[in-house]
Amino acid sequence: MSGNLSTTLIISGVLLAVGTTFLMFVLPNLLKPSTELRLGDGIFKTTIVSNDVDRTKGLSGIKEIAIDQAILMAFPTESEWGVNMNNTTIPIDIVWLDKSKKVIFIVKNVSPKDSKGITYTPKTPAKYIVQLPFGTVDSKAIKINSVAIFQIDSQVIK
Figure 1 (cartoon, rainbow, N blue to C red):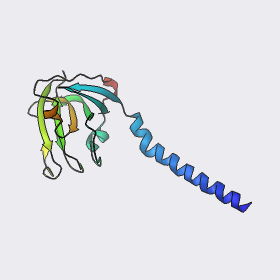
Figure 2 (figure 1 turned 180 degrees about the horizontal axis):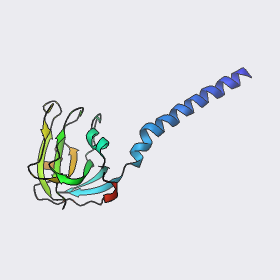
Figure 3 (figure 1 turned 90 degrees about the horizontal axis):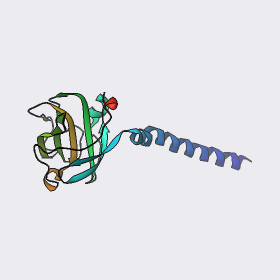
Figure 4 (figure 1 turned 120 degrees about the vertical axis):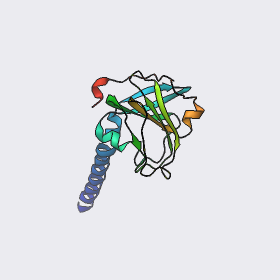
């Protein structure tokens, strides 16, 4: 009888650990809004980052980003929003969009090693920042005045 109780307790502990991990790490990422983003010649599966905590985190701790993925930072107002590479481990391209989703500023091939302490800021106000795998701006013909196409519910932006 004690063998069955020990097995039951071990299985229950494992299930509890798996459930807790799912609730803490997987579920929050599943609940983040997403959209399809078309920019230049590219189509990207895009996670929308729309609150101060997630925008500050950005790509911190991410080990890789697929060539068809992007992060879209959406802000409540236009401003000269900056991006720094603190705690970022992968090189990226950064594209700023105005409220009409037109590209107004681009920084290509930003390396975390070469960018410590640097904040990249557009010269004119932006409402959105798109973070892409490095090399994407060139490979997908993304240029100043290109227009992005995506859907976002303005109620999710905080």
